[in-house]
Length: 300
Image (cartoon, rainbow, N blue to C red):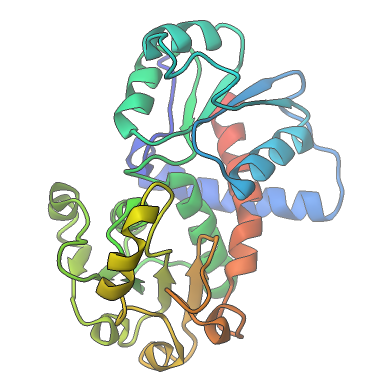
């Protein structure tokens, strides 16, 4: 049997993804009851970080412990990845020692190459192109609060970045309609968007994109590695802030999500992210439960 990887949402079928969300909710209930469930006893997750993150490390590390396994944190100082050793060689060696590998890096091509030479499952914990684990948490959160997302309307407000790309894939896989509001020059990948033309479209006006939406989502205007672009991005995205006025365009029971960290006063106001429509904190917690379901899926 071929090794399964999770580099994008397209690596799993819609049915598999749907089952994963159901299982994440079940695992969450098991954990809330403090029932002991350790299907990954003596299994090791190698966590390779070339790009730091609070939520990614804590959620994967906690998840492995709760499932009975062990998580090994590897910073850029702890591996030869990117320091002269070919990615292929690192993959060959690390996959002979760990049972599953999580990588958070910049280049998506690097994780694709790593997976090609890995004997064990590889999970994309974020690249410049995609952030699929976050989408599992987002869909789980929507399902918990509103039921199935199929046929719903989602508005993405902001940069056509890796989160936007994963929302495009999610629209295809989960069957919702995505309206992307971004300024010219900050569009998502054109080929990716074209492949999801039945599910996703660009609408420049953010209020128009938000009209009647069941879910409003945003992200920071300048991601890690884009700090030098901050001033220019603040100007470009000035009309793309998620605030009370924009939320009023959405459905009356619309939810708000943000993958965090958030810059209050920039892409979202404090009034919205801390308000009654925000499920951001449930969304953050669900990284733990969704990723536990993913680890179980790939290893058991």
